[in-house]
Image 1 (cartoon, rainbow, N blue to C red):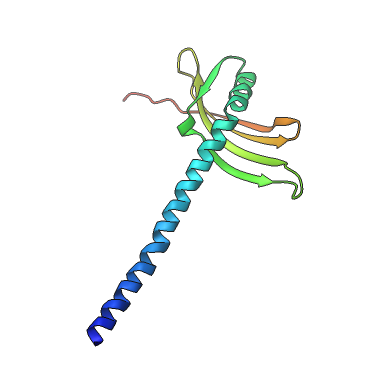
Image 2: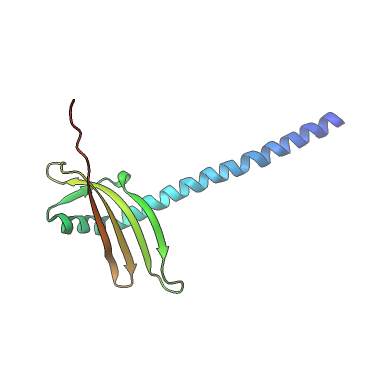
Length: 127
């Protein structure tokens, strides 16, 4: 009888130990999917912001884009501020790579650029 109780308790411990781990992994996957979805929705605004800044057609890698922060500014309204970073390049030659951080505001009037920071990506030199 003692052996059955020990085995039963062991099974319960294993079930309760594995379940939170599976839930945590699922939650991380949901966050990645949410961020990818948000980048996809903001894609046209990101490209138009890049084109306006550089004065030439630019492209960015969807997988290289990262959401750094999302803030809800008004509790009652739908006013959000999103900070993101993208790696982009010249559309024609796929060169002139850069990393840009932008802060976009989503208001009832649409998406607006609040801040834009440009960083030249270092070029690789052959030895």
